[in-house]
Image (cartoon, rainbow, N blue to C red; front, side, top):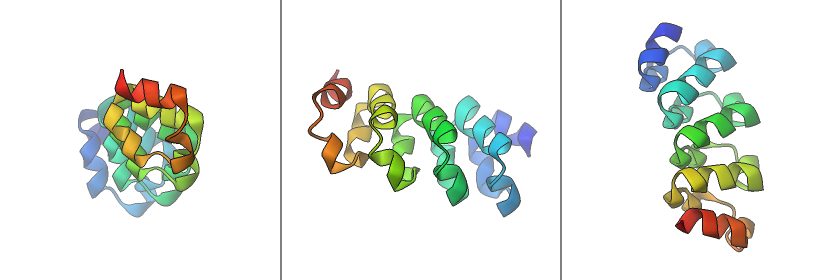
Length: 107
């Protein structure tokens, strides 16, 4: 499976529950191929800051699949909106008034 997700992050969709909870497998899928592969990861991976940050750095829209705790984290949200401004819609309301986050989303 690691070889498959290295080639195509979406392959995580077909992995077993055990592999969807394996940090190495999820990290490779999210970082090297497709940040939105986070959608198919187990909840504990969506709550892992390292995995989430890697995913949103690769594709900001992966923020929508992150655990709620990361949608209020300024660093994670900033990374997401800097990569893709549209990810701003998934940020927590309290960050939608943050000047730097807003500027990163629109520039």
